[in-house]
Picture 1 (tube, rainbow, N blue to C red):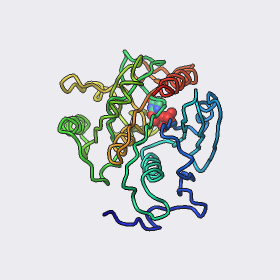
Picture 2: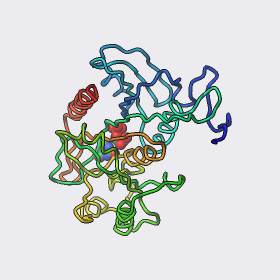
Picture 3: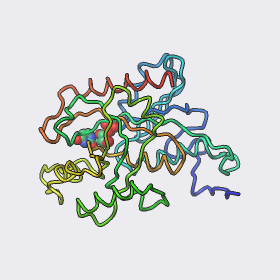
Picture 4: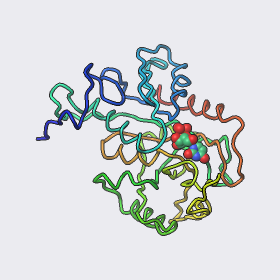
Length: 289
Ligand code: R1P
Ligand code: URA
């Protein structure tokens, strides 16, 4: 039998809400759309038939309501996999821990979690304006060093190939996203493999004033071909979502609005419209799911 989770480990606020997200279990739908930017939450919920609940704490803004009759929650996470670790752990606790007894529930609830985020392309043939679903996330951050995780042999092989290519002192973690959600949400989108970086500038090979340690990271990652497996785009959360989703038993898919092309050096003039297309694609597909 699992142990009671102490007050210091799972922190519940005096009003019964969870520490960082400030939510109670009844505030969550089982379909959760996530965005990085808190201002993007309203850009999703503007399409809801009704909004039943709103909350805002730190970078975590939540709106729960219905779209075409389907109950959905949209939440912002801020940037980076460290936020995703807090976000996923507290989201999971809201459905899989009994807040009265502090014991994990015996019946597991799996959530459908869909990231709607922006991203930069590392391939000439994937221009700005593309919408891309991530089959795999590849984490160049060290979050998963701190969790006991299992990977398939092919995920380990990919991680080793990327470690060698970049000369990193640790093995990047490669994790497959939800195949169930990919089948539904990937329809009409490009399918790619997303590199999750622990930063926007140096870790993605951008030089403003400080010099990146791997200045040719785009060319190196772009050259990877492991039995046809190629990398397509950069962002900052996908691999963290996929790894935490696997650990906690949730269906997670990351969708990317490509706003930058790192080969042609373009940044989309219509980035908001590209994100808008992705939002509409996502809520329409999930309304019928
Ligand atoms: C960087 O500009 C941010 O944009 C991308 C990156 O992952 C990072 O969070 O995603 P969002 O647009 O969802 O924030
Ligand atoms: N988000 C990123 O992390 N990188 C980009 O190039 C664009 C959006």
